[in-house]
Length: 361
Picture 1 (cartoon, one colour):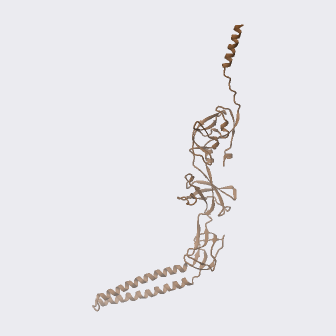
Picture 2 (cartoon, one colour; picture 1 turned 90 degrees about the vertical axis):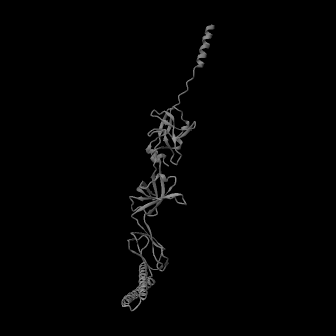
Picture 3 (cartoon, one colour; picture 1 turned 45 degrees about the horizontal axis):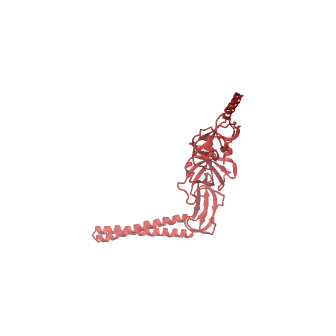
């Protein structure tokens, strides 16, 4: 009987020392995404909103002041280079031109007289009838009249040009977009009378933040959408980037040429320019996919068998598109992007793949 109690006690002791196996966690759904360079390129695209403008916008103005007596053309009218836009009262300029021509005739007569006198003086010097000093004085007079003739001829040329400046003509083919003067109005030299834009070369003017200027380059291809027509995507090419940021906005003005512009694009419309940033050296994941453990940045990688594992990664600063992964992940791997704090290392999960388009901002 004593042996029976001894064996029973030994059995109870051995049974108590055995470790109770932990229950296996049941598989749970997990929202995941398949990472890759194509994903990064999608998330790295930035959209800049700007205004449709013409590459060439020319303010037409008179080169002299005067009173407008005639104006041609209306806003929206197509004009050709050399076509008259407006005309000033030419009375004063014509009188000035006539006076200048009279001065030229007078100077020419004085020059001819001085030249003839010099010829006579030279003959008298040869015959010893007059001194050399008398001839020198007459030759100096000839030079003076020659200089005077040159001066009045230049003044006459200026007066002639000013008489032609009373007619304002278009300096290029285009469309009149503004008119700021009417007949009877007195305008100053350089004051805008009309504006002509070239509708054959359409661009979009946008402002690029200084934090993103490194991601755009002249010649890059971009996509353009009009606010008035969201269905069509136009092809664009970056033509110009200002070398200095605006003092007001601290942004860089960028002009994008519309390669396939059509009649639906009107000047002044709002347009969005989609620019793909160059971040081919990293993968982008949502910020919720990255957590920290023991001072390291980690993500939860789901292998081909549906098992969750932690992996340390190197990240870049957070942006509005997510967090860039520069090392630790490879393209086409699955990463959990939601509920990462509830996962257990080695846990079986049921991947629910999230489409990239649904992650777009």
